[in-house]
Image 1 (spheres, helix red, strand yellow):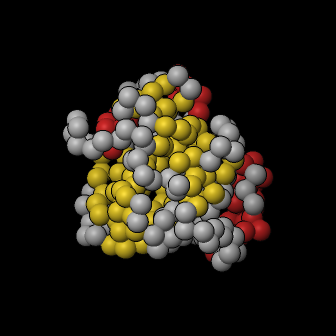
Image 2 (cartoon, helix red, strand yellow):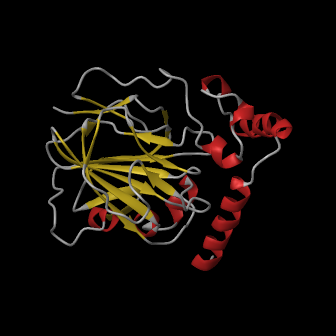
Amino acid sequence: MPTPILRAMSLATGWFADCKLPRPLRSPLYRAYSSAYRVDLSELRLSLADHPSFAAFFVRRLKDGARPFPADPRTFPSPCDGTFQSFGAIENGSILQAKGRPYPVEELLALAPGEHDFTGGHAWTIYLSPRDYHRVHSPVAGRLEEVRWCDGARYSVAPKVLERRPKVLSINERAVLRLSTEHGPLWLVMVGALNVGRIRVVGVEPGAKGAPRRFERGEELARFEMGSTVVLVAPRGGPKPLASLALARAVRMGEPIGRVE
């Protein structure tokens, strides 16, 4: 499907999601959505009726303590809810989008060839479905050094699409966040998709690089205004995936997914 059509579909979906709903309709509509996608409503901080639109419900906040982060500083937790699409070592400068679908990490991060050495590094790809919590929190304490906003397509990032179409994650619209941490740099990439054109980074205007700012572990870093994909990239010396991880397995924000040796 041509990119202009995909953008038009995303704009239409965004317009609908932003429409303010009459208060009496909110609870039944959100309950129907939650039943279809198996959303756990017991975790919501606000009542259903206090979310004025579907857009507000998509970025719903959770109760304090719903997603605890590990105390061990060498444990690397997931920054978001979702499902593992891939994880593992960066090989020959590439990471896996899906089984048998490698793509260059430099393209994903919008880096010039040779700008950074990723030999010995690791990556995780986590798909956020419509049921998941859509806010992304910093997995480590560190400083957000810059945000690179990359224009691109809005192909679906559903797992079956990633298995068929090459390089979706590196050609879709995305925000590339680079953090400096105790164990070296860490990249967190927010990948846009069909119906997901609005990516928000805390304290940074869309399209702006942003001034360096420190984030503590577990602090909200960014959000999608619908579901999409997060890719984490750690060079040598950073965290490595846990041996217990499994593809297509659900993960919750704060759950350990790696460890710094």
